[in-house]
Length: 120
Image 1 (cartoon, one colour):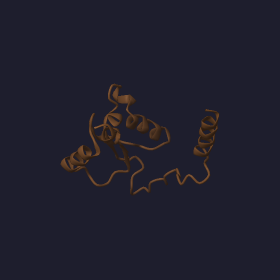
Image 2 (cartoon, one colour; image 1 turned 120 degrees about the horizontal axis):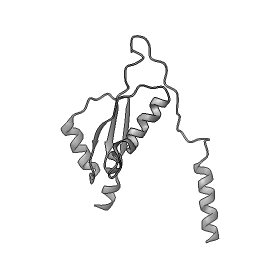
Image 3 (cartoon, one colour; image 1 turned 30 degrees about the vertical axis):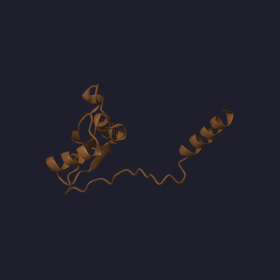
Image 4 (cartoon, helix red, strand yellow; image 1 turned 45 degrees about the vertical axis):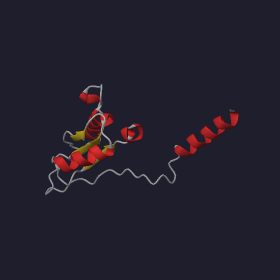
């Protein structure tokens, strides 16, 4: 049991390391006057019940919380377009994307799906 605990502590330390994560968060460049500084960034939220926040208020959905954080960072962000439903698998989501045929250009896209693939 002690060796498992030590292993988990070591894994946690490496997982929290900033060095070599390959993830880079950059402040976006200021838009040029031609782009319009107040043009809202578009947001597409794809997924299942985790995306639409099954059982929580709309303001508590993670995409809605993401919009709040982006606005606090100084970005103008439109409300997300959701393509998500409780119980969806990745196949259901693919079919819905094909059916809804959203614009092919969004400034922000999030994808949170897969738990139903595992359990169905």
